[in-house]
Image (tube, rainbow, N blue to C red; front, side):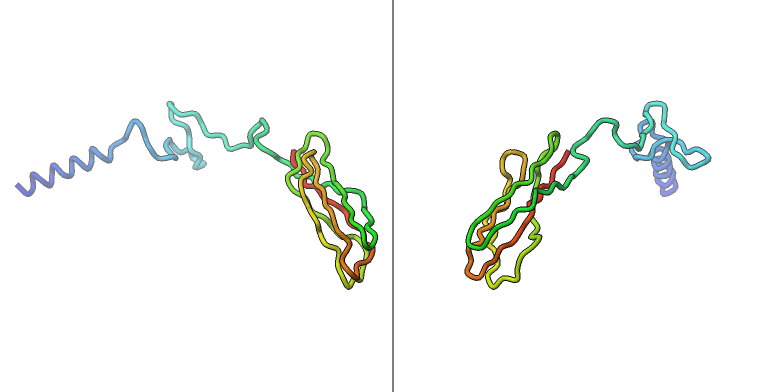
Length: 142
């Protein structure tokens, strides 16, 4: 009886391990001599290449505004505008000159201007502030 159960179990394992007409592994198919997977008759080859059409955004461009001078005791703003065909996604600024200060200029806002640009504003009204210059930056995608 024990031999009979052993033979039945072995036969079941052999049948279960036989060739499946619908393989489930991602590498199903025969391998060539070079090791490349050859497609089976019912599956097309998987081509690993970049898509031909544009998928999402592909390029980021940094656009600078003109330099803005802000005198002591006043406020000033400047906008960097993205070129046509691009969309603003973020922005920043650089202080390009001025100082030393005993009271640094205060950043009032750094925001999307809702017209495809980035606007930066400073209040240079802190006691001890002096004149300075800055540039607004817009990051644009296409």
